[in-house]
Image 1 (cartoon, rainbow over the protein chains, first blue to last red):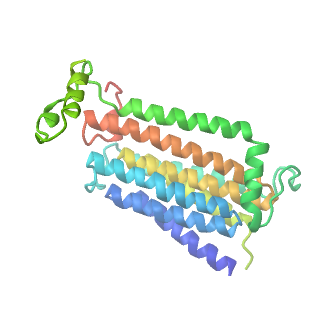
Image 2 (tube, each protein chain N blue to C red):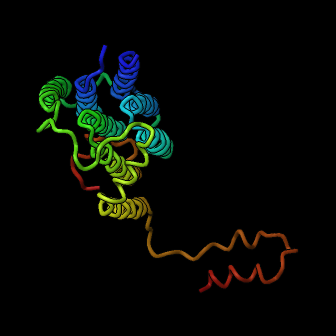
Image 3 (spheres, each protein chain N blue to C red):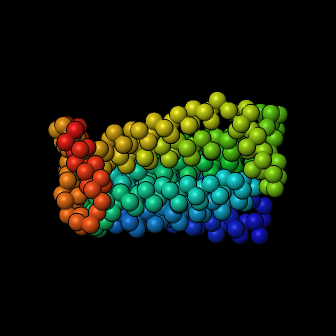
Length: 203
Length: 101
């Protein structure tokens, strides 16, 4: 049963990855990425990492891919790309060669690492069963790794500020607010609400 | 048939390789970013499976931080892509070999 679930989700993950690689349209690539991420979430469930499985779906499928789709639509690059041309000569054979090298090195390094450097079970934060996975993870995060969690908050703040700074447009000094919309308001508006935006624009 | 940790590690290595090859082959910067996400997913899978094998929660804690870093990286990276695409619509990664804006 476990092997069947593993094989099915592995097929889903790998076909999604191939889809990202080969899709001509960036929107299709984003959807294939969702497929691959869902497969990884199922594998997390198989490994009793229930909290991470939920977070994987919420953060990747719910936030990151949606962000990708927003940017694709915003930039209007959702047209198919011609994958037949190869602008840099020999790029693809070289990429496949490098990929084979990466696969060989990572596979050998990881399979040597089975059992861990010592092979001894963990002493500090033992892994519970799936039922109290969330509680154990929360305890580990907010006791042993609390400083790292605080740094994470700082990192997210920096990322938000950086994104705002990167995409804002600055065309000369700030212009006063337009008063056109206020002038076209119906005449029966009270006097004070019409005056306030004008004063702000003048100041 | 018993699913051992080696199965997960092999799947993670293959997924990482697919992401790396995609990063090298594709020219659309958005698709390249998606390939980076694939590589991060492969590493997350490796973390969780090794943590499960050793009975250590540290693997899942690491995945938590990788998720946060991935979210921050996507936000900043997409901001950069939007800023570039506003100046040069339809730019590919090859067009940006000279970073003069």
